[in-house]
Image 1 (cartoon, rainbow, N blue to C red):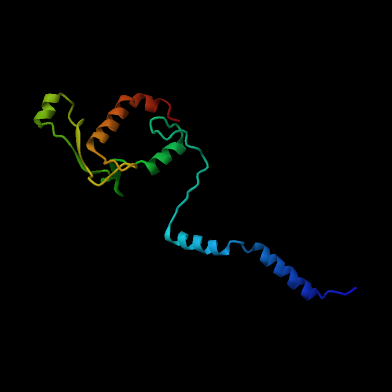
Image 2 (cartoon, helix red, strand yellow):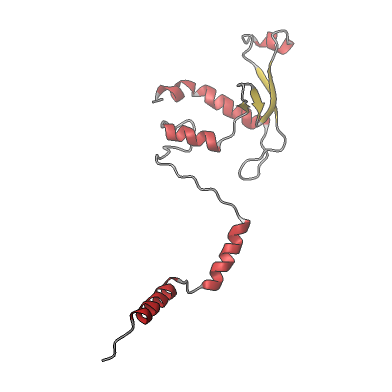
Length: 152
């Protein structure tokens, strides 16, 4: 019986270990790496579940954090909490001296006008319009009480 040198045994064991972790599709691995360099993906995990993708239905804090990250607002808030453009480029309160405002009978300060950005689109490529803004505001106004009835 021959005695195997410990150095030779360690060398063979190390080589077997090294060959066992090298992928069999080594060429494909380098192609995927090259493609991955061109594409940047940011994945963010979150411990809680969101209970609804619909902002009118969400109840949990996690849902509202999600809404803030996914859905754009008409205006944002700057460092000094001043209104900053987002989907609306600017906005103003219709003055109480405006003839349409006087005829409408609405209280002063209750009617706002917005200029909507021209380059925004929905996820399906449909242009974002003033009618979309009006529809969303009217929907939220209709269900305002229900939206706040179940807030945690």
